[in-house]
Amino acid sequence: MASKREKIKLKSSKSHYFYYTVKNKTKTPDRLTLMKYDPIVREHVEFKETK
Image (tube, rainbow, N blue to C red; front, side, top):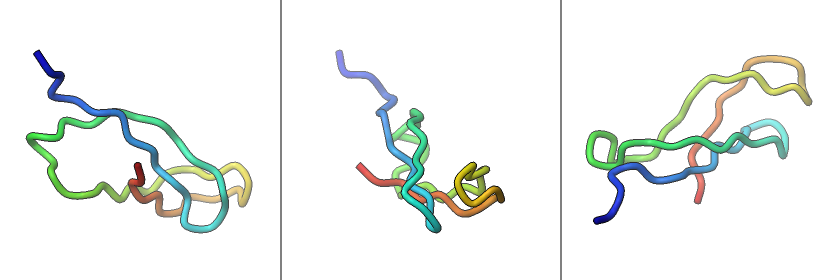
C-alpha cells in the first residue's frame, strides 16, 4: 500500500538553501509555499516546493 505522504524539497527564493519535509498529498495537492528561516541570508524568506 502506498503512503499518503510524499517527501518534498522546499527551496529558498533568495539563496540555494533548502529543507526536506513531508506533506499529505491528498489534503494539499497543489505546491506549498512557506515562510521559513534562511540561515544564509539571515532572514525569513519564502520557500517553494520543488521535487
